[in-house]
Amino acid sequence: MDQRSIGVFDSGLGGLTAVRELCRLLPEEDIVYFGDTGRVPYGSRSRETIIKYARQDVAFLRQFDLKAIVIACGTVSTTALDLLAAENPIPVLGVVEPAARAAAEATRSGRIGLIGTQASIRSGAYERHIAACRPRAQVIAQPCPLFVPLVENGRIRPGDVVIETVAAEYLSPLKRAGVDTLVLGCTHYPLLEPVIANYMGPEVRLVSAGAEGARAAALRLEEGDALAGRAAGRCHFFVSDRVDDFSRLASLFLQRDVTEDVEQVDISRY
Ligand code: DGL
Image 1 (tube, rainbow, N blue to C red):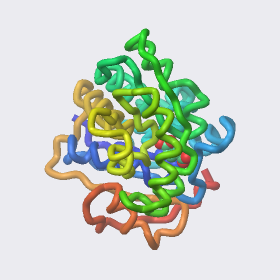
Image 2 (cartoon, rainbow, N blue to C red):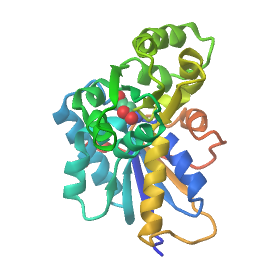
Image 3 (cartoon, rainbow, N blue to C red):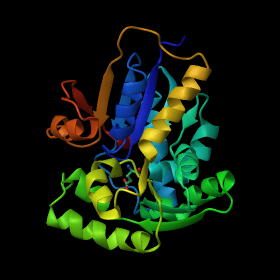
Image 4 (spheres, helix red, strand yellow):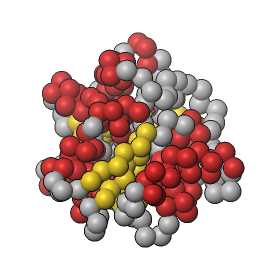
């Protein structure tokens, strides 16, 4: 048993899709979440900047007594996981390998679509992990740079002409390619599931990187006998920009009312 908290971070609020799955699987765990809302999006930035920001995010979280850190961000997982894991004495877990494995298992035709930020697609990390599980799989990758700002602004509903237009432009090459599985390689994208599923059709299976990462993290803690084993855990939320809208937006990602406090952090100090 290990009563320490699990640290989770993302460039913004997308990582809350992983928190939602973690809380569902492990309701007894305390979670400390940091969302770098002052500097989102990361996905259009250079590798060097993403690494610098991710190191600061981890340094902030390491002030707490943690048993593991979950990088609930496709962009940081594709770009900085190995580095962060090597630099820290506690497990640092990403979302890419679990999502790639789930997609390789889900596909029947071997044609897998992948959507993510520019940095995630540029890294080739999802393709490498899919190839390791299923060498003959064909991955058709599409960066979707407008999705994160639209999600952070709540433009997620089917029927919203802005998100529907942007989604059709990004997803049409994948639909034409006849993929039967689509990896949502960014933890913001599950909020767009209704829009994406409508466009791709019911025969295409969607794999969420955040949920798969959370499942893999839960399994790792369980296998390491590191679960908290208490009655009920709590979530502590921190962001790097204004906190005013946090409860409303966070409740969209967590799909529950958010009554916990949220604190603002000056992340440049870390
Ligand atoms: N949730 C982040 C990810 O999974 C969003 C990236 C961004 O900030 O651009 O990649």
